[in-house]
Image (cartoon, rainbow, N blue to C red):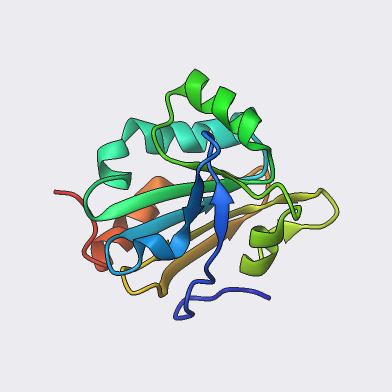
Length: 157
């Protein structure tokens, strides 16, 4: 399955770095969501991408938008990484069944056992309004996320 722009975002529930369950549908009707799939915790390109979000957290996590970052790593690894890097947004563990949410969104690499770099902007109604997928070595541009958030009225001023 592959999720495309215009599709209803498939719901899921995953544990964050503190072990708390986070459900995508909890944001429906309340906030837009920046759903960021990344390959692995503690890796250079992933760290650069998530640090870019961290450094502009007021854009990516506020009254209008919530960022959710997802990888196949465990909540325990996420907790250490979040503490080390100062991430204030949920790092969600698509740990078991291994990569199930990434598979649902069409961004799981079976050969490597991880998500590729897929980002989905989901509006308040739960519809995917933006999608970008990059290979493992290629970082994404957070300015593209800002433009997509602006289109759904969720860019902080």
